[in-house]
Image (cartoon, rainbow, N blue to C red; front, side, top):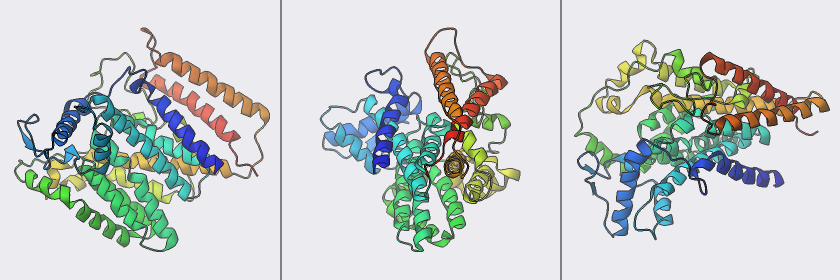
Length: 426
């Protein structure tokens, strides 16, 4: 109980520290692009209409007019949206800051649900923390902060995998009601193509657990739960010209390099925003890389299969996926290969938790005192250096290109040193 209370308190404090520049009292940064230019006007319009006692049926301010319920990205039937509106009900309009906090709260939710998933698998608290941090704070979630439906939808994924674990452990289908509810929330969050990637990952994980048929039934039932939003969107989509958007797949090494090399594409603090068009930042963190290396061996089959399944749909080998998707025009117009990228992050988070759990439960003797002190001191010095580089001096920035491997090597070495000191008390 004491450990659980400490984890909850520390998680809240570290989350606030991680996003300190977006939160009061600093307010130095804001989430740009789609969240500000597309999602916020939809949310504000719906909020104003409801406060005026009218149902928000039609939004004339976006795309020359669009039925709001038919635009699933408005997320009007997503329950947390109602919480956001109620929390701001005394205001005449929905300001942008509450919407940002709403997005960041979903990142924290993702951390908490991932932590519970790994604890449900019997992992040590340290391993759960590391795996949950990779899920919530690594590159994928940070890159997608501007995409409201993606962040809100992905945040619920760990609860689905936990439901599958519980169904396998209890040899019963009751926990899969939770899977159905989570699946419906992923749909209602406002990015329905994401549900296709979610369903693939759930199917792979459920097959490894031996509960595939029950899980597929739960996914099918979830679509019935979400039909109140799906049918208006389906009706509106029938009026839209359908073009195949799946593409050739995400195949270039440059697209995946930043999973291990954070600044490979020079995403520096002082770089022009369009320096690397079409490239993204997916860094897993030094602790994540250490955990993944230590996860090789038994007990990680589901995680590796998740990663392989995500890569299959991402890379679209021999156009196998896009050729099938093209036969369904409505699906082909909505689904893109990069929607399967969170599958890699989920797999990496699970591998990280597995690896750190092995480190925390190994039977070797305690680390020497000098290694403990040296690792902690090195971590403190390295963190201070990163904070120095982060502080907005004009001429200081992070190393870019292949040189970023040096920073990664140092970070991994420090994480490995800390890992060597991590051992459950006998």
